[in-house]
Image (tube, rainbow, N blue to C red; front, side):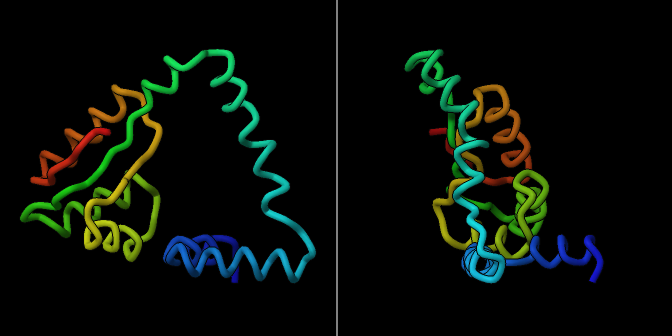
Length: 126
């Protein structure tokens, strides 16, 4: 398998399958995915502490409450928005309400809401 095939395979996995894959890699190579997480999260945490509570209040979650009549088009749009595989996006549409994106700024959330509502989906910003 080349890198592209591996990435494609991973993109089609469910959350449960990805969790199992990460656990298997950790066990096989004696590494920890958690060790990298604080390094990646540190800049965000520092920004939140320095900016105060007002910055955190501005973050918005995009929640799908109804896919509407064009369910397949909504699934494809979700795939583009989230970068998830088709199976995962279908699961989001089937298990409502579903949080599509978390921690968005207001402008980005409204843009995504508009894209999905143009397809007939019902979206809440929380």
